[in-house]
Structure formats: C-alpha cells, structure tokens
Length: 139
DNA sequence: GCCAACGTTGGC
DNA sequence: GCCAACGTTGGC
Image 1 (cartoon, protein in one colour):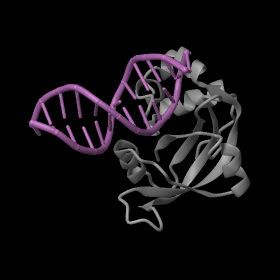
Image 2 (image 1 turned 180 degrees about the vertical axis):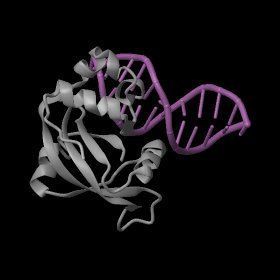
Image 3 (image 1 turned 60 degrees about the vertical axis):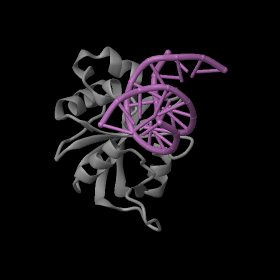
Image 4 (image 1 turned 90 degrees about the vertical axis):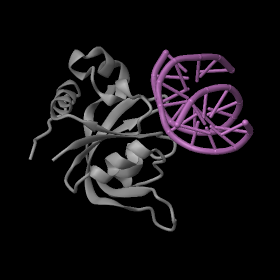
C-alpha cells in the first residue's frame, strides 16, 4: 500500500467538496509525471489532499477506490482515479510546517513544488499524522 | 503582482 | 535536435 499527495485549488474543488459528495473522481491532471503517478495508484492506496492558494495546507485523508481510467467523454491521453474521503486531519498541516520539519525535507511538496500528484513515503505519512494530531489507525 | 521552476511549442 | 519564446503553476 502506497501513499500519495494530491494538490487542489480549494476554490475549484476542495476537501470539503469531496467530503460532501462522499466519493469523487480526481481528473483534470495535465502533467505527464502526475499522470504517471496516478497510473501507479492501486485501490486502497491512501491520498493526502492538499489545498494550494491561500490555504497551503494538507487537509484530509482519502482512499483510492478506482484505479486509473481514461477521462470520460474525451479522446484524450489523460486519466482519472476514483476516491473516497476517510477523515480530515485533526489539525491541517501547513506548507510552512512541512518546510520547517527536517524529517519532511525530502517531500516533493518542497522539492518539486509544481508536481500536483506526488508520492509520499510511509515515514512522511506517519510524521504528518503526528504533527497534525491525527489518530490514524493503520490497516 | 511578481517571479522561479518547469513544460510546451515552433522556427531553424 | 536545439533553444528562445511563451504559458502555467503555485509560492511569496
């Protein structure tokens, strides 16, 4: 089981939108590396939802329900995945906090700041649970 | 509003 | 195939 981080502009589509809908389709990704990461996702992988713009913070945890499939109604090379919200972080983790935490220094959030779909390591995920005071029960 | 970091496009 | 110009993302 792997971990990923998904960026979204909350005025376009937010963690709260996903929570309200109870399930969603993550589409509109227009970057080759991000698409490649989406294709690597397996059902059951965990997703951290990050808000760009004014908020710049990780808000919640979702899970992959449907692995990569071609975007509907388009003869395009781009893909989407299905996902379901699991729980919000008790305290959102801001970009500033991520940058100030040495154990998170290698996160793509910092090192490849424009990549909108990026892998997160188990250690990084665990640390994010700690600093967000989120009682995540693995497995 | 600016700009750094990329990615894409098109002329050559 | 190179690279300048341009567009986009997203932090500041």
